[in-house]
Image (cartoon, rainbow, N blue to C red):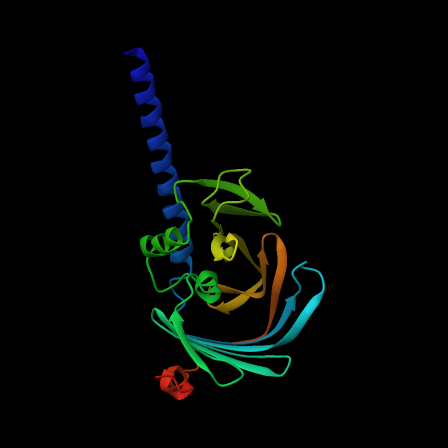
Amino acid sequence: MRTRWIAALVLLATLGAAAAHAAEARAVLERYLTRVAGATLRDLTLEQDLTLYNLDGRAVFASGMQRVVVKFPDRQRVEQVIEGRTDVRLTVGDKTWRRAADGRVTTFASPRGQSVALALPLARGADEILAEWRALGVRDDRVHVTRVGGRTVTVIGAQRGERDRPAAWLDPDLGVLRFVAREPAESGTVLTDIVFGDHRALLGALQFPWRQEIFRSGKLVLRSLVRSAAVNTSPPDALFDPAALGAR
């Protein structure tokens, strides 16, 4: 009987700690959303340089440029030219169309956790954002605070010392500094780590990272550097029309 009571107390303590962590995660996200609430971001256009790396994460494999046009909350157009080959992707809601360099158009479900949406968790409430992060494997009942570049950052999804768990690293002023998730791969799953840096003022209190690096299994695979960023330019709806790609 005593053993059962001890087990019950341990379980209650564990559940209580998890609930406290979940409340902490929600509170820190709400503080960030409140800080940037005055920035009405309707659309964003980025021009950026891309560098792709070999599997070892050291040697450059290819380079090019990319134009990203986002119309919030759920439309995005990505045009990129890599080594002279043009690729266009449209995302509308939960569906993506891709026109490859050879002109073929394919359709697939939208990639979860697109980088712009991760860098700018806006137009949704804290509960909705946390639900999206949980869908990417981030547990909001695991939280700790650390220091990055002299700044205090809340890590949602991992406890101190856990480096292989999906997590969002949130700075209360700058926003998301890092996002870790597991993605499907031929061998099962791979740990993808997106690191955002060189944050600059975008609109009001809203900051945006001008540098983004993507690591897979600890190896650098992609670096993007923003050359220009323009907000609220009202890009035409035709840019996001799948029919214009030749999609059926």
